[in-house]
Image (tube, rainbow, N blue to C red; front, side, top):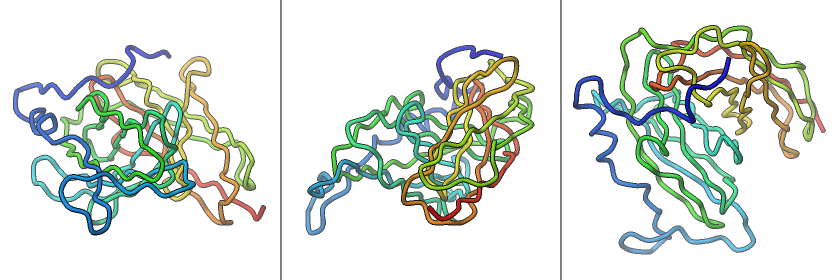
Length: 246
């Protein structure tokens, strides 16, 4: 199974209204330094080569915050992950500077997948020490065009810091508009994403290298995919990787 186009289409509505809600949102805000005034940039931290992205996800119909939205940043290079809390807020720390950092949001239960690049033409490139604030909305879609995924797997149940681990997923139905490139296994707790690419037939594979400073413990990964009409699976299968002491 291959990809139909390069990515999820922009939020052009089947009827008219909802897309404008996302397109009319302001671009990402650069947070003010302490004691500053007005629209200011985050204060760079000397000696750092990373920044961070923070924001809030809300339901487009009700305006209420949405918890458990999986955040993926820069999936083709940076590959960072986070998840929204009960207040809809998220923090993605240690985002490598000077690299394209598209911001993606995935939620179960028939919510539309959000992609900052395709929805709002936003692909931040952070400077060292900079914080970008990016809020977005997601809306429910009719339960008819979701991709279907199965056989989520991690090649090993345990790993140590610095070890590279393989992840795999089968996409049995590409979803409305065909399958997009966004096929992932993501662990907000670890802060990492495996971008899963075609490995023959309907199988997709990718890897994550466990960061050297990862504490021992259990690290759940959620598996999901997007269609070109911005559907993602109704439920995300999950598997757990246990990290051993280094």
